[in-house]
Length: 475
Ligand code: ADP
Ligand code: ZN
Ligand code: MG
Image 1 (cartoon, rainbow, N blue to C red):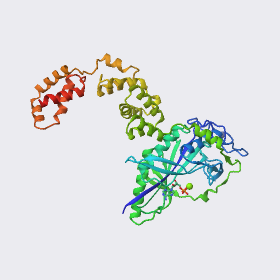
Image 2: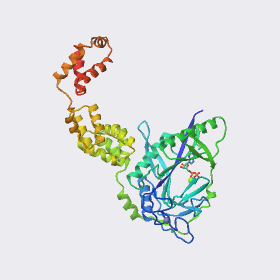
Image 3: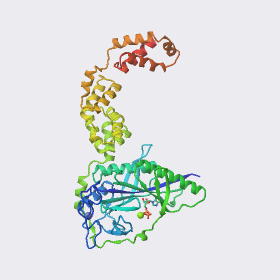
């Protein structure tokens, strides 16, 4: 039996405002426990919330960038919980009248086509604090209580764990482009709950879904979904019905386990927040925010493909990170070679960024130095291998590439008569390999090139070496 996965994601993103959603406490990450609290966010009696105008602007900006409809009037609601990290006894959220509905995100599939994933809604809400379990007791840190969040809910339009990750990457790219959130997953500023069900391929009706929580990296989300799809498919194949429930992902075992049966909306006792006015978002604010939205990832990807004639893959990798895209365009302005530049960014630069866990903004080689290095390659003064060695040296020192080339006299040798001499020499003492080549073993070509390169101490231009070798071998 063939089964198809159906996935819908709920993403909580923390807005990068200076203060919290309903009080003026700092919204900064990493302060000492309970340093950023006041009577409002610690739920003292008699206090009143005041809505943070900047948080509203960020939320609306996000909705506009995600092609959503902005609802002119929306209502905050109390969602009842009883947890120590939520001292009010309820979370101030939005329920049946969110500030935004509809919208979509386009993701690209492995075959290069685009798939449009619908959004159901986006609403604003406050974050809870954090319970810290220590020894036999538990402590509560309320620094995060009242932090501004938006929850972005997708339609059940995703069909595989890979698509889910593509969706999240695109969403993260858009939100960071418009600078409403840093989407830092390690700090919990971009959290995803995944809803997943399976059904027989071709079936129209949705299957019973399970919600998976506790995944703080794209890799874990992909793993958890894959595991869950396998688990549900096996149950269905055995004729066992799926139980609607919330499950936790355990990254050590790569499995999910049941946490609680799914709560129903009426368990939350939603009701309109009496302490807050309806939120009115007017045309003027919408137009103002629209005008602040920069070129977004999709538009940049298409422009890169059109303007620089680079493959879609390169454009997507580079344009997903706004700063990297800026770096790339500056690099191309120096080298005038879009493909060589994208290759170097994707291979060498991104390798270093990943190793050092830094962003391009903190990279030790600026676009001018890298551009100078690539120009040496383009002018054939050095070959790619030499360039990589020089690049590695540049990482740890402000030295310019041309200085290294001069210091170590690395300039590539184009001189045909010089290379011809070496080729003659190598062929003369490789009679066996020459015979092999003549009997059709093309593979020994690599051996010849290697010998010539070694004898020239890596400086011969490999293209010239190849040409001369072929000419001589065919004589
Ligand atoms: P709940 O009432 O449990 O919150 P919702 O209908 O509000 O469920 O949907 C929450 C999320 O789950 C959405 O992202 C939605 O796309 C997704 N979803 C809903 N039904 C299914 C299903 N049968 N399979 C997979 N995902 C689903
Ligand atoms: Zn406060
Ligand atoms: Mg729901």
